[in-house]
Image (cartoon, rainbow, N blue to C red; front, side, top):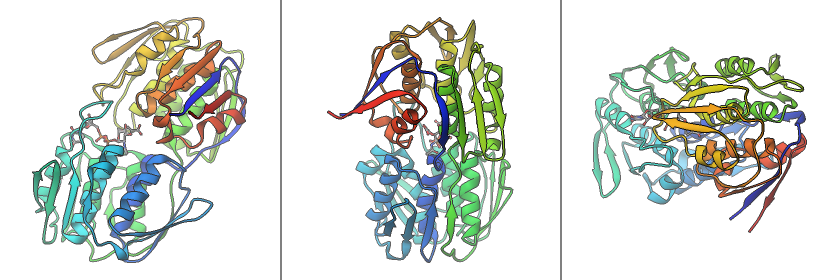
Length: 419
Ligand code: EPU
């Protein structure tokens, strides 16, 4: 299993390009199956979850071509299987996204039921209840969700929890349903909006994009399209945090600052000097002291859970006390014991992590447990004195494109050790 080896303490300096957004590209790849002709996708990041999504579409029979610049052509016309096995769903929970589109286009789907995962129990009741409201018959048999429908019917659906993939699944089901569907309390994350824009480019009729009420008028068919995926706001936020914890000066290119508003405000509160352009952000932390920032994770446009672990690392090095409250997932502090092994002073009270900043972190052997926890350990490693070795690094490859190459480019001393 690969490990990352980091010699910490180098202030980062230089420019980095941000890749396409993982959480936009996954539903968009799956959504391509709704078209009646080939779809071409660009700005595709090179990530393990993308490879898994391609494998998923190939498993159900789609023809897929990947070119060397990582644009993807997906021809859905050859799809002939409607089952997604446990092996795929256990590798990537987002495989559940295939349920809505398969059901609305082909009238049947068998998708292995995702279990819990490292960050929480993560039920899919809202996905299933929404599809039932649209007329689907859904049973759980031998660990599979078995769904059937003649043609889905538009429905008025209120989702009682804001769910990103739940909104996306129902959106993809509704675009080919008969009549009008209204999704209330819909997630407004930029990745949901990107999927909705992609579906509209294919001929869907979705109104209210970016708001919490989506109105979808079903159409008979969708056509292929050429579509560019949005930049990854969480990758961008992670590299800004890298500039902060190393007291460096980093400029991000090909980023969408408007997707990061709540996060940028928190960076400013932490003492970072930001300069923001149309598609770039500069973060200069040279000679500045990190200030503690209190955070509560909430659905977009509030502060994202996917940036919680990175800000926690910033707080471990800040002058003073900070409270970070996680309200989205019940078990998303698995990085805390590992950070404490590096000298961080953190206590947990329910869903709140309380940090008392220390002057320095010290390198150690640590274990990555999930994607964003891994990112936080890398941040701690590049900030710490001495050597850090991060085990189980495969988690990071799910969501960060060549992170060690990008960080090396701005001066970090980080290598991957294959074992
Ligand atoms: N929930 C329910 N019932 C449901 C669905 C969700 O109770 O049917 C609850 C969840 O248990 C959770 C809350 O609703 O407490 C929000 O979960 P959500 O469904 O929004 O999460 P998700 O769609 O499974 C996506 C991202 C996550 C990101 C969350 C929150 C993708 C592929 N994944 O997950 O990304 O943390 O939204 O923004 O889009 C990551 O990239 O590291 C990651 C975990």
